[in-house]
Image (cartoon, rainbow, N blue to C red; front, top):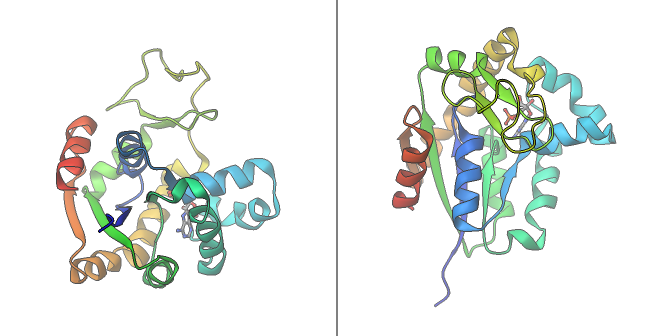
Length: 215
Ligand code: AMP
């Protein structure tokens, strides 16, 4: 019998380290990370039709409508590099998106969900210190995971930036949106028996090892 194709979902508040863990797991498993936030930021940077549609919403810390997100995700996971599985970072974000995702998945795909849990206080601290490389999108944190050279990407030397939506007032709005929209997903996936809750405050390598072990 052939092995089920893994679909791994990372859930957790903004700034909790989902993107970092999704990247580490992607390298380890050799399957792509599908980050809706990255895809939307690319669209904004390219000034595409999608980018123009979502720019304001993203800058305000709100959620892009479910129909748009479904078509972005569906187009991406139909590409051949997702044939052996994929990792979702930032999708689904609410119960309606979870229902659409279930419909979009094939029966031979097996879903596993990881919730990275962290307190609000720690999230604010993490996000306030977060820096992103505008070139390769690697994420750093001036407190927890600083680059080797101040404010420069270790990989390509580009000056790191603070993402527009990492400003404090936007972060507070994103957290509010998260609690209202995304939190109910934990219960949903718990009931389906596919949820693993992990401590998002561990060092990233330790957490990555724990996730691989759980898989
Ligand atoms: P992220 O990098 O995942 O925090 O996403 C950045 C922003 O992109 C979010 O604050 C939303 O405005 C938008 N976004 C990303 N993923 C989704 C999604 N699944 N549903 C709605 N909006 C999203």
